[in-house]
Length: 121
Image (cartoon, rainbow, N blue to C red; front, side, top):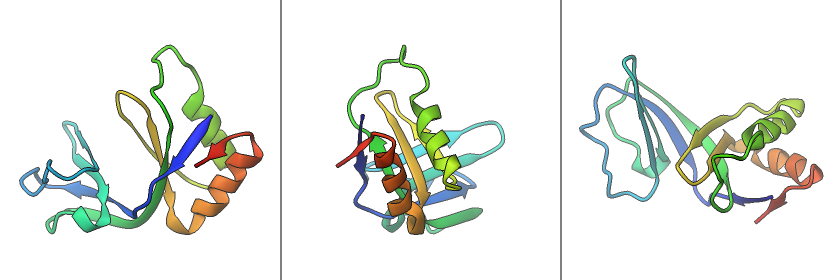
């Protein structure tokens, strides 16, 4: 399975509202529940107003479109990273999964995954 490193730093935010989210940007994950609004975006695109913000994330995605019938893909990746004491923040789209780790742990994470048979591009 191929993993593609994302070439930018990411930020995870908790927002009061969605007024400052610019959907024209090319990398946004927005989650809204009855309890909160969360945003993952390029650090350079993070809104100025937020309730909480954590910078310093890096990430990679699983290449290709994943069929909904596939089982355990994210579980296996998170298991390898957990064995190596690397925490994750995962988000999913219709097509695939994105895994974020703190940027200082990205190389260690990708090396561990390569040792378990993943290809990093």
